[in-house]
Length: 304
Image (tube, rainbow, N blue to C red; front, top):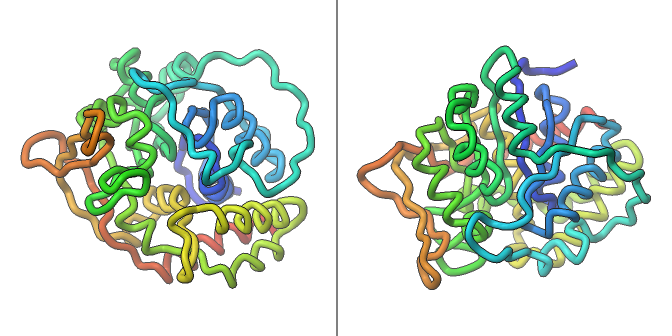
């Protein structure tokens, strides 16, 4: 039984931290579908990885492939963090091939048009699928209750000195979305670098049922050795914070500002820049770390 009546769509590029975001969302909301986008790895791998995570959770919600490259650029992936598969660290079984599926843009159009009430949207990868949907179906924007995204930073980046990875991969899509008029919460490195998973807590994953608990333990043991931002204090688990921000915005401190995204080729590519004029975006700038982790472990307790 869901603990929230919130209807949600998840757009992801799994990715270790996307896996944790998906697994916390499943028991707490009515997840209608997952759409996959290229980012942490190529689309074929992120689409497969979303299905792998749902296999471990025992869930059968639809997983729909979206865009295989950014709107205007070549794809940049994060294999140096997530490995060749995008979910290195655990030996997944071979899954049966999926049946024929539509493209995410058309699938989303059908869901938004037919669902009886607005749907919340959480995006934890590059914003290519989101921007493409808004460009192709602007008449359905009113059916989006809110967009909560993991990406950006008002301080330092993690792929360049200024830019966070998701925004860097497709800055044109991010800039379009930021000015779209949607109610947006941006959860970026300003808070994900504060909520660090302690290495001592990795064993807590093993208290969850098999195979999911062992999967998470092995995935995050790998991720903690390869995530460049992981240090002695712990491992950033970026994407799950977007799920928390949707359900519990009171865990965060917010700054409201318009955001412009740098679309150059050099220093400003993917930089999320606060500006005086434009559509207001709620940007997370601080987090109640202990309360966040209480929430996260409680959500994962559904898998015991």
